Image: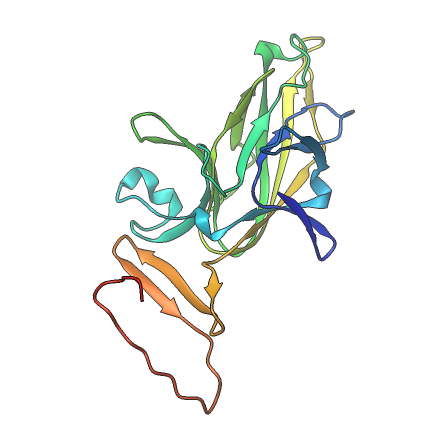
Length: 238
């Protein structure tokens, strides 16, 4: 789903594929593949990629996931496996010509991250083990790459440690078969809007997943107004 907000095109619920061109004469863009078979081309400098509250998850209790944060802490992840209502963001190289690049392979390289927290790109295998490609919690050296086979498209997990707006700068590159020179795209900025938990009711009540067993509740107050809080051990209708 793409819609306008403050002059930006906001993409929140869709199967998005970013074309990984790796050569200078092509525009970097995305395809918005919706549930009705429509395939709209969106230019990256015109869109914001939004992680809705349904993307919130808890960091597993495993040292292998320490790049995401402390075990039990809450992060937002645009997942590698499709989840209803959550942006399904892919990386595609299916518009590249077979035989143009060595080993029919190009890479997406992380150049910079601006935002309130850490950004990561990783995949989890069938045994639950992560492979980390990007991790902005460490110094970004320019050596962080995500490999993409020409003619393919793939999905990974896009992780954000705290809500807010992130600007992630990447470039695509590959080594040309003809001449052996490296051909690279212009740097591209991906803008992500990571939402916190939703506000509900007139009080702006927010439920936040604090850890695997704790939910935190916050709400807006007005000076001079008294509030009564009721607690139940269980939840039921009424």
